Length: 125
Image (tube, rainbow, N blue to C red):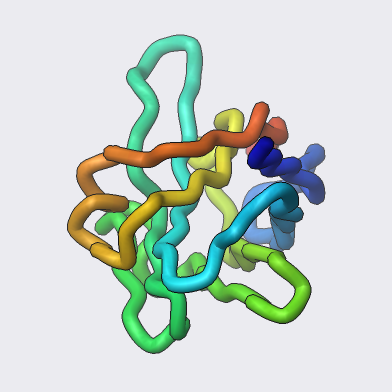
């Protein structure tokens, strides 16, 4: 059974940085794209970042482009999201997700096969 477990969330001041991690188990994950999403009580879950299996192709939501960086370590079955220049509007529960394809478009569309339970990121002004 596939399990995705996020960690690294917390409280940070505006302008600060946090790094989220997502540990995957119960795969296989070989060849599959992954992504990060976020959700607040006021909004539906939204796409944040996507990465193909090789890590060579990445896509970001316009709201985080230039501030966030997605990466992965396939040997460790880990996915990461480095978040810099955090803003109060980045406050949300962040979820990692895995697809059964290597299509980055599938990730952007949110058509994921496995989801973590999320980690809360709170950015104070």
